[in-house]
Length: 116
Length: 112
Image 1 (cartoon, rainbow over the protein chains, first blue to last red):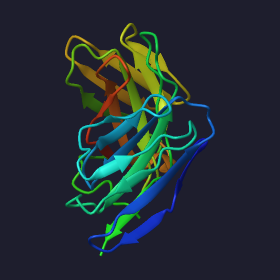
Image 2: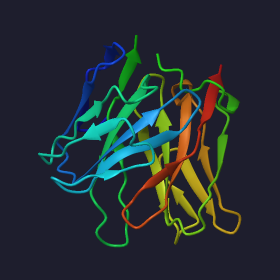
Image 3: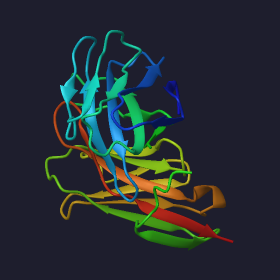
């Protein structure tokens, strides 16, 4: 898990409620990412941020929002507009490859969100 | 725990044998590849990576082979141990800023 923490480990939400998942890293990484994982599937990118105060949509951003006010923190809000939010959510970080090289993404322990 | 292995391809390996996990990637322009290990209910753990200017890289008990001609990546685990039981994902870098595309994963089950 390295220096990436996610909280809470388990989260339950009622339909119609927004919920925010926390992700913090102390690796001094520029880039941070949010992924969603469903059973039997690979990871799908929700949002990513290369620098503070900037973020980009990934492949499945609808129904989610993020902020990047601090380098260390990249919280994800699952809004009521997300039609099927029950999933395992993973946060990752990396140094940002400003050259042609690409750097490894390191993952947090994940948050399991269940909608009741 | 997280049922990440549900419906995934499964590789059953006897303890002490070598394991080979295969991955076909999609983008011929991908220049960086990573293997991750994910245990039930946990986040993926980095195992080993390889860049496209190499065809083989070795780590501790693991070797990654890259065949760019057929867009194939493999992970070899030597002397497989019970602690190697997990889901293994390959990932490829598909663009200039580092976006990774993940495969669905392979469930490895080590039997005594």
